[in-house]
Length: 508
Image (cartoon, rainbow, N blue to C red; front, side, top):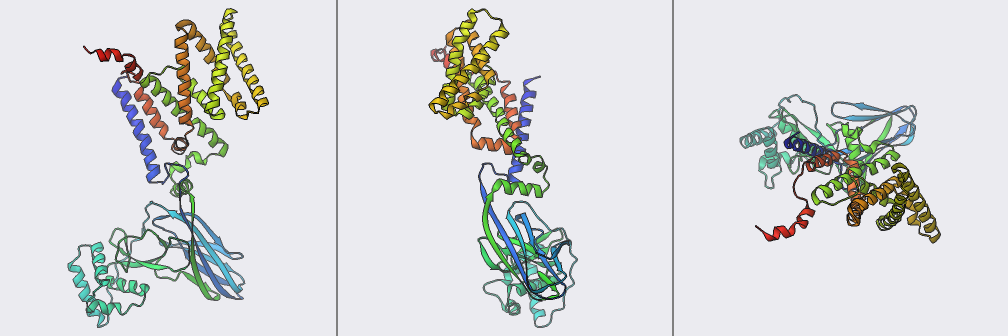
């Protein structure tokens, strides 16, 4: 297989891994670093009424489509009341019912939301409204405004923006002042704007929501203006004229119906309050992915049982260690005993910590190497000799653990977690190289293996890398692609450049 094919596969794997990671970061909101927190708002609607002693039914509109936010949790606290959820095209409604309701009754609806970059939209397509008949003198004023705005606009969006600009001008003319005098609140002002838009047959409506930022009590729903341009609903602030839904605006309901409806009681009231807390961003993103039915939420390692997660947190670091060995041997030219032995030693260092791990590794290999040279004089066969070295390694580990226990050095008790077979093979391999190539080469490869194990320990215990590999396992494709790319490298290694530096300095 030619070099181009290998590099093509390497590039394809790297791009695929990075694209999946980018999708999970930018679309699902998964953080790239651990322990990031985000704002979470808990919004509560408290509905109170006085029961008359007979059956009672209470309806409360609750959020359904919430642009800019994702729903994390939802609770209906209704005591003895029965609860049903009704869904319409634009709204969702909670209906409570009880056979007997006497005296003061209180029900709660609670929702937890967090910011989201997920897009939301309303699918309904409204009918074109009939142009109303305006009474004088408003008819002349509205007609003048309509004609003036039409001259300075090109479509529904620009028409609405220009209309809001003129209606909210700081120095209005007499026609606009006449319209303003009819509205005494934001609610009525929005209705007047909708009434004007009907004159040019632009579908318009009000959406209601809460401004949430910090913790607050006694919040009130306020309206935004929405117009339909034949394709989708466009939102505007009726007072400032700004386009879009504000960042802190939580949409609660659509339309002009009251947020509550009561049958069988008196004096119904609703109070809104909000509390801001913080939550791990990774948990928020996971819930957001689940709410979108993303395939990545179903196949996430975070969905595994905790014991399995702990296993994979360790296993997923092995490919990074292998990539490190490939880099150090292929591009740097560092010599080691085998490919995976240094990485397995680095995994053992996770238990002993680096300093004591290096000491114990050096001690066991040195003592084992001396015993191995003595076994060579006994002229043993290969398999019995390897078994003997393994048994000696176990004895050495046992003695070190017993001695350190008496000395009270608890950290060194973890030496028993060293891979015994790897240590035995290291001793055997080092002794053979010692005999064939001399002590210098054996010590050089032993030191190289220990150096790679130390670097591997630093890499494989890095909290950010462990998080990235666990949350974004598709990065394994990137690691695989890099290994394939380095697998066709035939250039000089750094060690060779140092080795032949005298030849380079001489010149031609």
